Length: 102
Image (cartoon, rainbow, N blue to C red):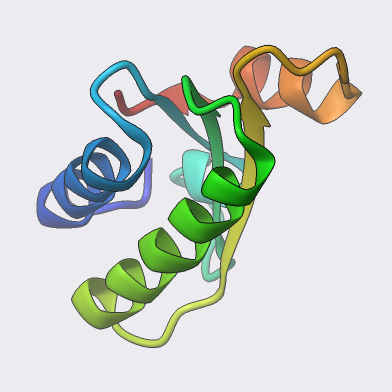
């Protein structure tokens, strides 16, 4: 996994702060592969927040906090909110091939 321990800790801390204590986080994509170089930070987050507007607010605040903590890096965020009936293939791929951070 190509995240430093402090970077992973910042991601986890921010996820809990903005999405709640029951939040689950996976790193997926090229950053999971130690043999690759570069690449953006791809995160998949499952949140207990059910309200769509609250999830959007949490997403924006989380990304702003991450950019302040990690510097200007490209961060892709895939969110799945509690109670959603939408079940996208990216959700399963991120969990199957990603590294669980939280």
